[in-house]
Length: 635
Image (cartoon, rainbow, N blue to C red; front, side):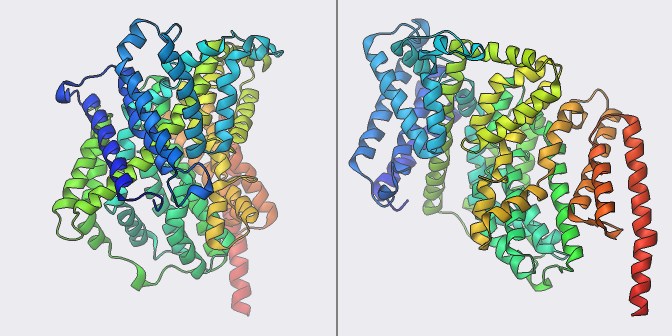
């Protein structure tokens, strides 16, 4: 924040406190100072608080990184005033139907606000997503003239489009932004609070205590530590940079090659957006789309997330065994008991969060309760006690994170609004099913490729919202479980973080490790292979999604089958079988095919695959290892 002096930092903190207070007032039904706004007014006020300060926090160009130009201050003020005006007119907007017919002033302000949202989206989300949202925002102007029947829809004039984007419940204030105000904000606050109070260090020390001594311990610590850290924030690139600055040098020092160390961290960090309890913004938006409590989304995502990290763990363990990489020195490993004793309240906060989510069904209030507990403990504890400075800096951090996500999700609303207003969102999925001839696999492959391509330039939330509108309904129409269909989209939306040519997380860690970005990216693809396969298994066997199976027996069998498949496939990818040693290329290929076979439904296929796996294990155990032992004894 070098471009902001103390005065503007105070402004950011004040606006952040107001925004968070508005959220608490709304979600806890407090009616503070007699304020109890309508839903749309509440969302406009959030934009007034967080979208406005984004112009202060995020410079328009690199040259402004160290200074705050007058036009950013002007945009800050204009945004706050326009959003505040819409907030005060919330009741009239709904009752008088301003989203289609409105007085001159709000119509003009809608045009200005349209431009402001696109500009702040460019600053926070990048040029690529801003261009995509700009194109979609203009789409209603020409929808009826599109020559492709699949994309034809109802057109509107410029003023109608502006009003619909800004003042309807399907535009900027659509279902995605509504989930920000009603759900996401609190969880983001909790993620920042637990991180700034030392939760990241606590979970990293836990990982060191549990896995530091094992072979290849530094890489396993990176995996477990990044999983813990990632599940609190859900951000792939920031996790990779934050944790990677600690784990990558340690991995290199213990014998891992730079590109391998960078790939491990990239894959481990990318898992944060699919790991409960805080999975990233897309999962909360998913809860709104499906009309389900968030805890059901988090519960369903547990096993796929475990499979992802198991696949990564098996590979790095095999790599350590093949290259004889040792664990961390005893002197560098913190005491587990001491770590738990000093940081027990982080676990208590997580338990409290989960209890409110799953037992008391208070998902909107849960993160605030947990956050308050952590802040109070930070203030009253003896060691590293918090004062005014730490609280001020916490609200600064909250302001920056919330302003970024608020602006990105508001911008994504243009996609929702355009597709809904033109009617294309309803016709596209129907035409997609007809074009694919009800072939589920073709729709899935097309959706996976679309997710991957869009993920190169758009955030996971933006990709999810787009495909939740046009593709997920098509998947549901051919009989796929709605939860599996939406999780499929989220998984594939995150694939581009570790896959060349973009691979943002892999390239970020490569720079820390001084490794080749492309080599790191391709290594990350191998280590994260489970993420490419498990989404398809979720669709064909939704029983692995906890709470979605017809019976406990079906769920257990499905989980055991896919767990064996992940273990075997990961072993084949690395070329090392736990308990069987290094495997030759022919055995490796056979083992890999057997592992993939476990992902396909069908009892006969599973029996054949399991038989092959057992034979391979016995061959490695009784023949190969015995031969190696004899060779060693003769030498």
